[in-house]
Image (cartoon, rainbow, N blue to C red; front, side, top):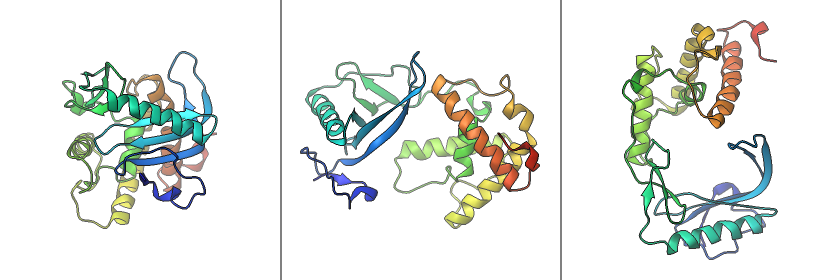
Length: 235
């Protein structure tokens, strides 16, 4: 039996396939997927996701959870039979890689940082992560994850955002509240550049969708904390 996500352990439905006991799994009867291709829009599907202990992420989709699991397990068997993998960056700069043979995904390389990336403007998505205390170092996270947390923390400080040190031993709830207030204050003081399409960092189509969503959330939070007037609330 695989490691089942905590929120599914009491579900009547349980995985049917012979997953390894060290594979973490989760599922859902209806998930919304945003299209990143030229079709645009979104679609709903049942899904099943598996994270093998050796690394990687496998997602299956279907009309039912059973179909989604079967799709995911078929991908898992295909990846397990592919040896050795031939990793290629395929456009990823964060260390991610796809196998040129079977299509599996894994963190296989070191991240690539552009020259001057330390001064790159903070995106709305990055601000939302900072707002939630996302730079806090966690002992159970992989070293590369904590390196990315540290990188974001240093970029935030360089941009003038006074959040606590990423390794601070402050209580987690207090840490998040301090970060929330700091981000809201910073966001309100830079509202014109954060809301101007010309000033915002360029990103992929999918990145722009998430940035717009996070921008509205940041605006509402700045209003709730009193850094912006209520009449500026997004429609």
